[in-house]
Image (cartoon, rainbow, N blue to C red; front, side, top):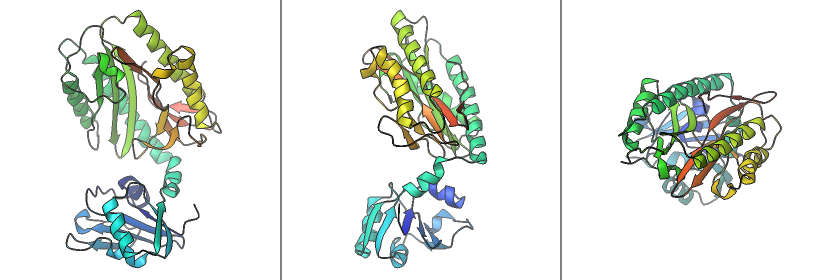
Length: 334
C-alpha cells in the first residue's frame, strides 16, 4: 500500500502477528508497525500480555491509552485497522493533527489470505468437528423440536468438541428458511418444513462454517426442485475453483445455474467469503470481487434460494484452493 506505518488493532490480526489472543472489549489494543521493522504492542494491564515478539507499552484504566501511540507516530499517513473504535481513533487524531488516517488493513489481510500447513490442519480439524455436529443436529429433528432449544443443544455439542466460544448458530424452520440470517426463536417444527442448519464456531481459534438444508417429512415437488437447483449451483461453484480463476467467475459459475432455472432474483447474497481466524474475512467471493484464487486460500461456496413466506434452501461448503483445483473441507452428506 506504500504505507510507512500501520496500526493493527483487531484480535485476529494481532494474534496472527504475535501469537497472543486478546479480546479488548471497550479497552484499547494496538500494534504499531513501521517500514523500518519497528513494532510496539500497546495494551491494558488487564490483558496480561506475555508475547515475546514485540516490545510492549502497558497502560492502566487510569491512563490515557492513546498517549503512547501519539508519541511514536510519524507525521503523514498512517494505515488504521478497519475495525478500530472511533472513540480511540478520534482521541489519537486530536493529539496528532499532523497525521492522516487511511484504512490500512490490507497488508495483514493479504498475508492472512494464504494459509500455512498448521492453519490448514486446524481448519480441517474444525470442519471435521462440524461434520459431527451437523449429523447430531439432523438426527435431533422430531416432533416438538424448537428452533432456539435445538440451537442450544448444537452449541453444547460444539463445546464438547473444543469450541473456543459457542456462537449463535442459524437454525431455521419452514418460512424462516427464506430469511438468509434468521435468528432462532420459539418456532416449533412442522411436517413438510424445510430446515436450514448454518453451523459455525472457532475451534483452536480457526473457524468452521457449513450449511445443510433438510426436510422434516416428505418434501413437496417444489421443495425438491429448488433443492436440486441449489445443489447443482453448489457443485458448479466448487468445480470452478482452481488457482488463477477470478473469484467473480466462481460466483458466476454458481449463480448462472440458479438464474437459468428462473430463480436468480431469489439468490440474494454473494457466493462466499474467506475464513480462517475470523468466520468472515477476505477474500470476498462475489460478482464485485477483484481477487483471484490462489493456492492456500480457504473460502465458502454457499448458494441459496429464498422464497419469502414459503421456504428456503442453502448449501455451504468450505474449499481449500490446491495446486490443481480445490479440496472440500466439509464432508457431510447433501
